[in-house]
Each structure stands twice: as C-alpha cells, then as structure tokens.
Image (cartoon, rainbow, N blue to C red):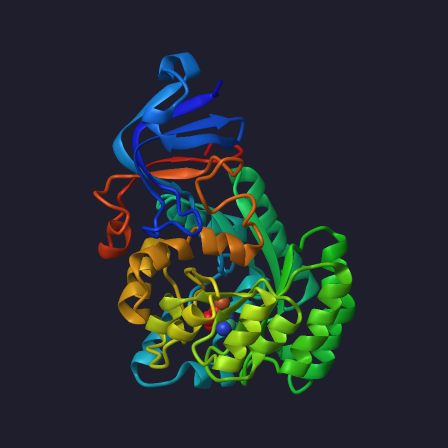
Length: 406
Ligand code: NIG
Ligand code: FE
C-alpha cells in the first residue's frame, strides 16, 4: 500500500488552521507513495499493521517530523565577499554611503563578472549544502550580481545546475533591476529599458527565469522604473515580487500588489495602506531578520498590521554578501521571534507553509499533507517550538529529499 511507511514519530504538519498552530500529531505515521505523502495521521488509525501496509517500514525513534524547510529569498550565487565593508560599517560608514561610493552591490558585481560559471557553482554549492544540513530542501535563488546579459545568464545557469544536480526545488528569480551597473551610470532609465527589452526577454527565452524581482528604493529603482519591469514580466507570464520598503517607504508593496506579486520582501517601512493592498492581492510578506540584524536597523516590520489583515508572513535568510551573510535558516527563526516578536508557530510557518506560498508552491510543498511532496526533516527535539528557542544549534537528524538522492 505504501512505498515507505514512517512510524514512531511525532509530526508537526504545519497545515493551515490548526488549533495549536503547528498541526501536532503525537505518535504519528506517514505513508509515502512515489514522491508524495499519501497518508498521515495518528499511527493508531492506520488501516492495518505497519508490516502489512509497506515492505519498507522506518522507525523514527520518537523524533519530530516537520515539512522540509524552504528558504524563499536568497542571493546565494555570487563571487567574493564583503568582509572589508563590514569593517567599514563598524567604523561608522553606512550601507547606503558604501553603495553610493561604488561599493556594496557593485563590488559583488565586479567579482561575479570575473568569476567563471564553475567557480560560481562551487561557491554556491558549499552554501546550499550548509543550508541543506538544516533541512532546507526548497530554495529561491536570485540573479542580480551580473547586471549584464552574460553574467545574469551565468548566475541563472548555476541555479539551474544546483536544482538539477541536488534534486531540489528551486525558483530562479531574475533580479536585473538590483542596482545600476557602472556602464549605465547616470542613465537608470536606459538601463531599465535594456532590462525590459533585451535582458529579461532573452533569458526567459532560454528558459532560465521562473520569477522576476527588483530593488525599489532610493538607492535602487523607482516605482515607475519597477512598473516597466513588471509590465514585461506580466507579458511574459512570469510572476513578480519586490524588495520593498526596506530602508524607506516607496509604496513599492502597493505597486507589487497591483501586479499580483507573490511577495513583497523586507517591508520594515510598510504602512497600513500597503498592508491592505497586499492582503487584497494575496501577496505574502517575506520578513528578513538577518538583514535587519546585520544593518542594525531600528524600524520593525508592521507585524501587528500583517496579522490584522491576515497577510501570510514568510521568513528567509536573504543570504547575500552585503547585508545578510548568514547560512542558517534556523537562526532566522530565533531572530524573527526575538526581534519581530513572532510566535514560534508563526516563525515555523514562515519557513514552511508561508514560504511555499511566497513562491507560489503552496499546492506542492510546505506542509505535511496528503498529495504534497514527501520532503521532510526529522528533528532531535522535544517540541517544535524548540526550533525557534535554541540558536546556533542544529538538531536536524535526518531528512527525506524529493527527487534525486543527496
Ligand atoms: O536583500 N536590498 C537589496 N539586495 C540585498 C542586498 C544585496 C547586497 O548588498 O549585496 C538585500 O538586502
Ligand atoms: Fe534580498
């Protein structure tokens, strides 16, 4: 009846609308057929003896099972590092000032343009493997450190190879509108036209793009410029998302909602009108406590408003060399609780069900439910809230991938 049957586990299904927030099933059993969950419930309700239901019965040793984790906002593919800028910031220079002086994103662009595809692949592979050790099995990976067609292509090809070589679910996001490349200095509109009319259509035609993102900020691009990009994305049938309201309120989230964005990300400066627009459009909020911490931001995202309007809150590492060089999604759980006052059940939903939603993957992963990916983690913990409580600890004891064996 089942290809594999797991018994002697406790499950936190993270399914929607569960009274305890986690969807806890003590003494659970999980039946798998092919790559999907085909049965989940209390072991006492199994329709027969385990040995009669599957030839492959696995004993979970009383561990906790959750859906595999999802890192729904990353910039994992780049060359070099920005440790020297970190030191500059420790001396009091701001992130925005470093960017204005030609450092910041542009210094990573220089290093990434010089790197070969193989060098980029190897650098990113190490980062992905580190995150996978914490049970992350679905990733979003953005381009945006190329800002020319050849280098953006190189980054998106690396994302494709990581997806295929590791058997992961990956959403490859084109972030051409991340920063103004030096060859377009003083000509932002020309660069946006190049993104819209050449780079995005060319990379989409090569089947390298699953979604489109941009950086709407006073040190990034304006709403008007982002709208041009969104129009082309819509014409190509690609979903959009936006780095919005990270350092100031540009009303980027409203624009994103107008284009039915999957998510608006960062959102520290989001106001009530923006939250309402997101709620109406079904746009998720992606909170990024690593960047908040590393930039020592003071403005908190409007968590109460997001709750009030029932906007799903996802959480991600935002791994990037400038503002969030973290390789721990579990640490983000603790930071989201400590800094943003999320409850443990909200935080865990943020890296499972709501992260799936932020990628448009809500029907395929993010919860332990019949018909969804049989992708899960076994944790050596006493309760799912422990994943948010400890920090700098990795209790992942086993994981079950979809696709290829890791
Ligand atoms: O998500 N805000 C823009 N993008 C990144 C930072 C990129 C960088 O500094 O290299 C972010 O924080
Ligand atoms: Fe980001």
